[in-house]
Image (cartoon, rainbow over all chains, first blue to last red; front, side, top):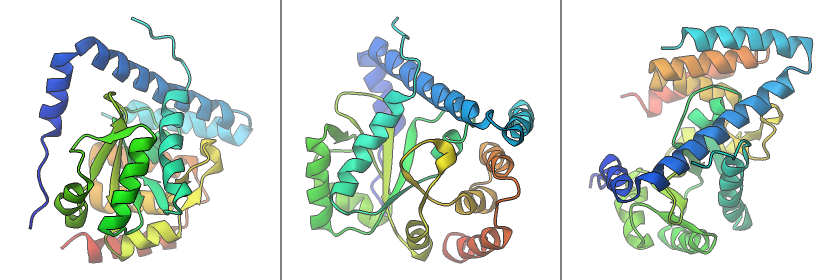
Length: 66
Length: 188
């Protein structure tokens, strides 16, 4: 038997129609948390010369990513 | 709009609360895929955190489901663990959990389905560079999956990111062996 299909996009679209402000608030909060996690990582990495060199290389990847 | 939350605690406490339920029941897990890159500073958004969990019977899952509900999590695909197990987990599909009443993030849970997943769980590791206390699948495994199976521009960039972070430390022989397993179990 094939796995049951669940319409995730439709589910969340309906939720957001019901309470858009709440949806937006939670998405922003979660995105902020991801950015904060990245900043904490770079702060740790920047403590060593090798880490700072890696940060420069990582910025190159980010710039080249579509 | 209140955007005063400027630390990672929302995300970290979500994962922590979820995996604590698993650990309390002695269930082995590993965080995999996109979140591994994000935990290493990759600047891209995701809505879900992928977790592989050791094989569970229907009864074991029902018990886990109850514990997750008690910890404040709900499954967005439904509330009947027996049906969820049969319709999704037994078919090697995933279940998505959120904190009750919230939208994001989601924990996307899959049960181990083959020797490759078993290997990921057996070799799971904590990654001190992330500053997080959770178990992840190894860097080599994540690189192999992204380069051999997933292959989207986002995944290739994730792989380059991890290779840069762990420059000089990636075991290429291990990456190659995992790619061989991926071709055996996932690409047919």
